[in-house]
Length: 132
Image (cartoon, rainbow, N blue to C red):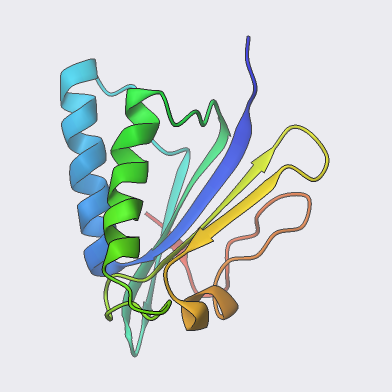
């Protein structure tokens, strides 16, 4: 048992490659345990973007699987200056917990946050993405 969340991350291509590499390295050591439920991709003039989503996951920053993702997001945040990240590395993460008002938003670029994923009672995937 435990506390479960829905976690959705929208990220540009270079950031996605960093996330995928980190998750693959984690999974290699633990037999494919930490795999998103859904992954989407869309191509835009500004480049390729991805949305990865876990529908029911224990998102605890003390867990190694979650650390494999959060450490990359921290690196992406450190690349931003005054919430302006380099192209290819912008991201937005939304975590919705089981309890009412348990919503966490994290991002590294204001413009990407405004043009990215949003939430209602669940996180809808923005238009233009196709399932991978």
